[in-house]
Length: 144
Image 1 (cartoon, rainbow, N blue to C red):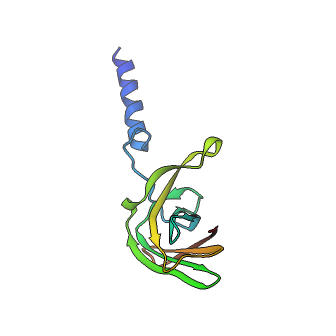
Image 2 (cartoon, helix red, strand yellow; image 1 turned 60 degrees about the horizontal axis):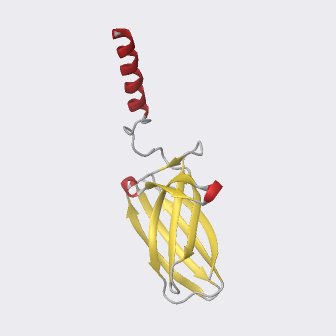
Image 3 (cartoon, rainbow, N blue to C red; image 1 turned 60 degrees about the vertical axis):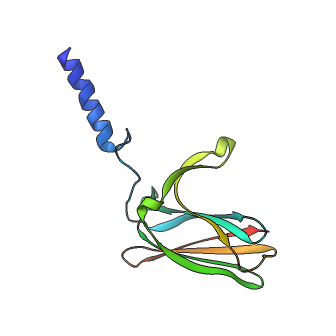
């Protein structure tokens, strides 16, 4: 009985230690690239953006740093701004629908008001600057 209790205790400690039982939080390996940028229309004069960072092994990660966002259409710049971010602002969210639904670690920038109503295709460039000063860039295009 004691041996079985000891075995169960060891397994639980191992699971907590690896983060498998809620003891770990989000991975915070140094980011190597912007894995994905997602942007969608948010009203006639807004855009909603999130991005995903990945480490050198391709695993999603969270990081402190600075994010710079530039949104343009064929007529020029609609938004150009940035802000400092912390790893605690990243979260684990469900993305996709149906068979494509999965969890992702991302930073949701939320709705951003644009200078004017866009027309046609809109290009979004997200540049994440790591604490070491390395710029990581991701791009996407969305349509209005």
